Each structure stands twice: as structure tokens, then as C-alpha cells.
Length: 155
Image (cartoon, rainbow, N blue to C red; front, side):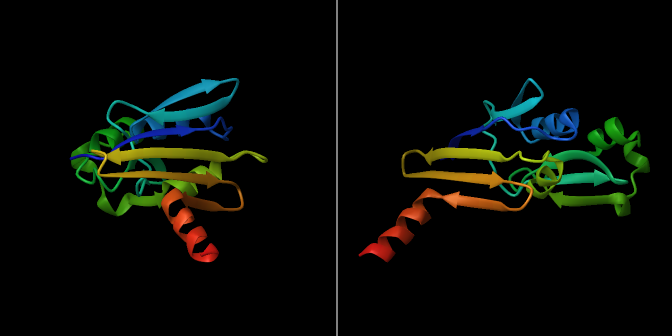
């Protein structure tokens, strides 16, 4: 059985709207833009907030990969965005960065990214989590863990 989830962010503003939109799209999210703000949510493929990394080629942000699609062929993206044909790709020029840290670096002053994910696996288990990214910090919130911690503190 597969994990099914819904993901939704708040509206937030970034330095390079087109780049962030493209990278979120490469991670499998739909991205809406309204009055200079972005908002993203999952698509029919159920994109998740799992171990997302920006892949750079020669310092150019190319695509976002996650822990569940490591086999993705990003050579096409390197050709499209860096102009380098697959046979000419130098593996030493490929680098990665945590996507949440990338988003953090893109935020405008006073902005934050707030994302919720609610999911289940065949109703065998349910999960709810959240992520907040500000210029100062990145923090995950896991509803199940928060409830367990609260229970331990208050029994």
C-alpha cells in the first residue's frame, strides 16, 4: 500500500520567483503565483516533503530530487538549464543542497514558508506534520510526536 498525502503551503515571497517555481515544480508540486507570492501544493502524483535536495550543475540550480526518486535522470535538466549535453557532463561539477535551506536563502525579509502535510497509508496509519521555514530557522512539527510528548509531560 502506498502513502497518500495532501500538501499545502501558505503564500510567501522569494527573491527569484521563476527559479523557485521551477524547482518546486520539478519536485512534483503545483505552484500558484498571486501578486508576487507563491503557494504550492501536491499534484496527482502525491509529492511529499521528504529529503528534498537541489541538484546544481556548475553552480546552476537544476532540479529538486527526493529520497523516493533517486533514480531520476537529471541529465536532461542539466542540458536544458546549463546547456551541457549528457555526454559532456562532468560529474565533479554536480553538487547538492538541502532544498529547505535553499528556500530559506530565497525568502524575502519578513516572509516564511509554512507547509502542512496530512496523509495515510490505507488507513493503517495516519500522519500529520508541518514545516516552517524562516530566515532564522527551519523546524519540523510532527503531530503524533507532539501529542506523545504532551502526554508524557502531563500524565
